[in-house]
Length: 111
Figure 1 (cartoon, rainbow, N blue to C red):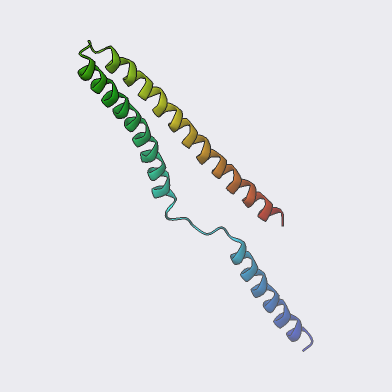
Figure 2: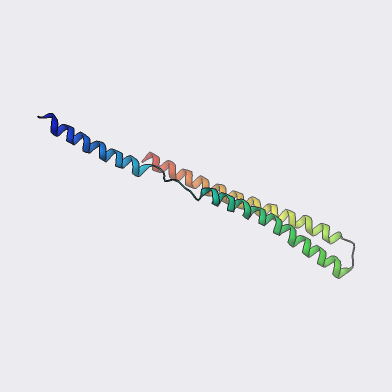
């Protein structure tokens, strides 16, 4: 008869432990795939837009000045460089965000 209260308390303790474990489990992120795809598209668009702007400026200058396509080539290369630089900056921003999330997760795990 004295075992009955202990069994009830043990069952209550197990239930509370299960709730605590469930609360600390990381929640599934269904939108993670889409956010990664959005980030990839953002980087592609930055690269292509840099190329297109450089191409447009070079073509416009060549047309206005009546020159051979020297400005077209020059500004297309500059647009490519600007697009790559912007893309790398975006990649660094994404990496810093991921590292901050991982550090936050590690801090929560330690607590």
